[in-house]
Length: 132
Image 1: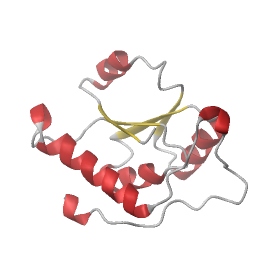
Image 2: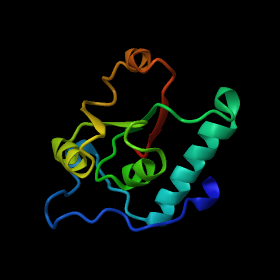
Image 3: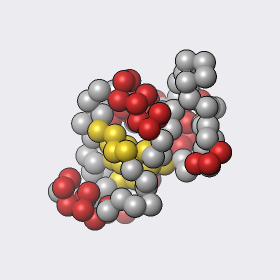
Image 4: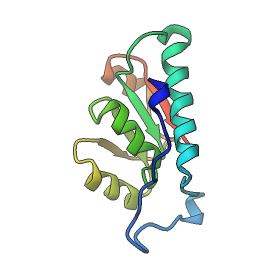
């Protein structure tokens, strides 16, 4: 439940392994309270409103996970079978693949992805989250 979404430490990266690239407009989420608020709002919105009300989340797509601050919480809550990510930076793709080998991480530009085709493959509408 959303009552159990609390702040925890954000990912600690090896020194110098992943610095934000200005050319990609990157700015990594670090505040655990902000992470908790985003995930709580996402969960409430995705499960308590509209057509999805009361339904389990079965196909979540995270846009631009970067260092994985939101990803860590989403994997903890929903698992790698429900979540997939779209990330442009190959460094982030590598880190996420190392951390979560079962997580599907698409190395792609979120602006170029064919979301209707992705939903068709999933067999259901996508539920999207991101901090871009």
